Image (cartoon, rainbow, N blue to C red; front, side, top):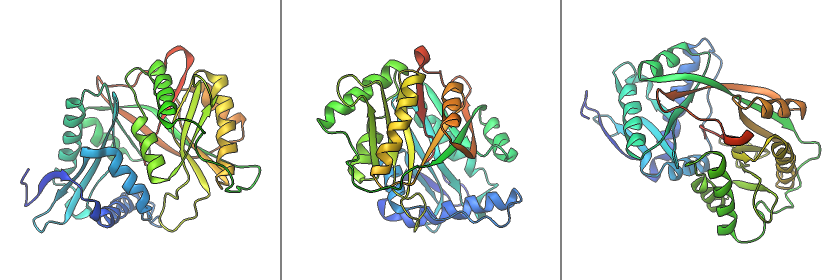
Length: 316
């Protein structure tokens, strides 16, 4: 799409993580400063997290370049089966206001529709009316909040336990996929499970560990920001048969995370699941951050079936 010397999209090269990381930090810092948060500087992310995000997006890890070949924008476009979402995405500050933001979002929509996604969404900061208006003009509609909640673990992490249940890995993934399919038909987190294990970023908690899974949670302990300690377990994907299983699962995640060396657990709770939010608050979790979940008109999320709970993090 030549426009003022711009070209793209093309798949990002693995050697360009540092450039994407810098653009991400600069763009989001600029956004916060325009929102009046002058003292905020968004840190560079852990390169391991970028490698995971790029691998998870696959052919949807897209960049656009300026006339000199430098990256002007990027969009990580993900498909978890029938669930499609975008994030992170950013335009270099000096290239904003030229229509490039619209182009990268429209390309993401086009690819997700072509892949047959029944859900197409993203998350943005609820205080940023410019962002909400921007995405609304492109057909997205606001839904519920994703509330990040955290809890310090009662006992310090020991780094003494296995991060994945014993037994056949293929069998374990099959049980997790079967549970997800029963609650959210078409949604599949197998790629994220496989890449987390391959890149050694975290672990998987399953309830129970044998037989048919009634709940599972995929979590990362690799530090999100570059240079930070890896002492937090962040739940990325989660499925539970019902509210009581969710309660048991969260307690099991805390035990597994402590064994892996974490001192804190963070859950990005989709507030469409009110009972799950209540359980987290009653378990001592405190609100840390909020994001607004937006979905393309006609491509909205459908709550999990039969009282189940499915959390899918649309950020990295």
